[in-house]
Amino acid sequence: MKPTVLIVGAGVIGCSLAYELTLRGAAVTIIDAAELSSGASSATFAWVNANEKPPAEYQQLNVLGLRAHERARRSRALGDADWFHQTGNLQVAATDAEMRALEKKVGRLTSNDYEATMLTRAEIEEFEPSIDSTGLKGGALYPKEGWIDTIAMCTGLLKKACESGAVFLPYQRVTELKPTGQVTVTSADGSTRHYAADVTILAAGNGNRPVLATLGVDFPTHPSSDDGAAGTGNPTVGLIATTGPVDTGIRHVIHAPGISIRPARNGGVTFTDSPTGARWKPDDPRIWTVPGLLLDRARTLYPALRNASTETVALGTRVLPNDGVTISDWITEKTSIYAIATHSGVSLAAHLAEAVSDEVITGERHESLRPFGLARFPS
Ligand SMILES: Cc1cc2nc3c(=O)[nH]c(=O)nc-3n(C[C@H](O)[C@H](O)[C@H](O)COP(=O)(O)OP(=O)(O)OC[C@H]3O[C@@H](n4cnc5c(N)ncnc54)[C@H](O)[C@@H]3O)c2cc1C
Image 1 (tube, helix red, strand yellow):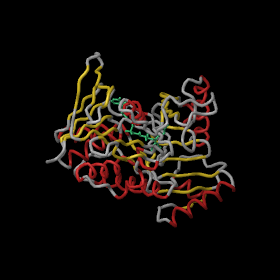
Image 2 (cartoon, rainbow, N blue to C red):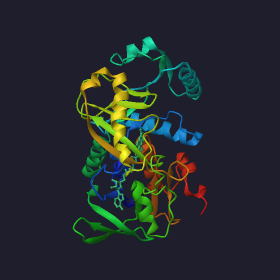
Image 3 (cartoon, helix red, strand yellow):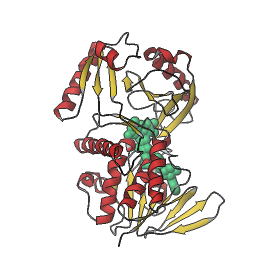
Image 4 (cartoon, rainbow, N blue to C red):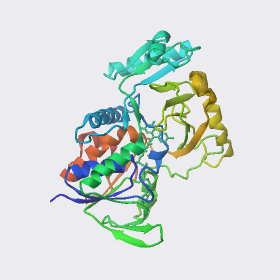
């Protein structure tokens, strides 16, 4: 008998799981406190990569993530899975010291069979003709990387899952979790309901911690309300800005000192600070000076942005396990409650969903997930 599965959270992880589990014959119900892709998955740079993510097992997990996205892109079953834009990632260097650092990185990655190649300034101009290369020394190309349209991904996967019998219930917030996996949810009108299944999977991002607290479990992720001193940085908050539609000619995901830029789903560009997004307290008013500063940096690379303005700015709260590395494990010994929490969830979602679905169906630990259990945290 295939299990009934309740998934809490319809971000990139929950929607990928709903798809993979229905594919394996499970009866899936997926619930979210809001709409699909409304948590970290809605405010992400969405760069798909395994571009130096220590330790080695986490690097390998990201390689598997990238490969799984490639497979999904080619999959006949997914047909119109066009959310992975495998554009390649171009990292540019402005100084000799940056070029030397890039050369070392490319050496390390290629020695581990990760595709990466150094580019001269002339080659950058060839690969990315609309970039203003004045002041650039050269760069590196990572051809297998790209970016994901997370809304298209969540919508596409959930649609496929629902066509195979899954049920999606939006605007249902889990307020209590019982040891059996039964959840109490509160709807937008204040009414409450209970849902139960053979297996409950928590894929609620930063919502996992408060939900598990109702069970008395201290889930080892940073609380999303964690606040550092003003301006010195909250480790979890990053800023993602998008211009209105503008023809920049951008072809790749671009990483330059102080700025990362990629094409956006609205025909503009999405940008964040490099390497991984700003680190601010969300209520620090100075945060709103950052998008202007970043847009100026982007304009030095793409002159076509001169007349563009920022259309949206999102403050994304990273889902951060206490040691920075993915958690994917059973919460209870009796395999009824499972939890996933991860940064780089966009890169990892396609693989994690396959591996966790296999675990749920077979009851066996998936080889690639063994290093990502809860036992590594002190109890
Ligand atoms: C600024 C920033 C930049 C990033 N850049 C990248 C990048 O370039 N590449 C990359 O791979 N990753 C990146 N990430 C990380 C990636 O976006 C996340 O790891 C990923 O989106 C997490 O997905 P998720 O499905 O686990 O969680 P979420 O997307 O947060 O989804 C969780 C869902 O659960 C729901 N929920 C929460 N609580 C409850 C509850 N009590 N009841 C019911 N539902 C609930 C929420 O409404 C939400 O829809 C970035 C993240 C941020 C913030």
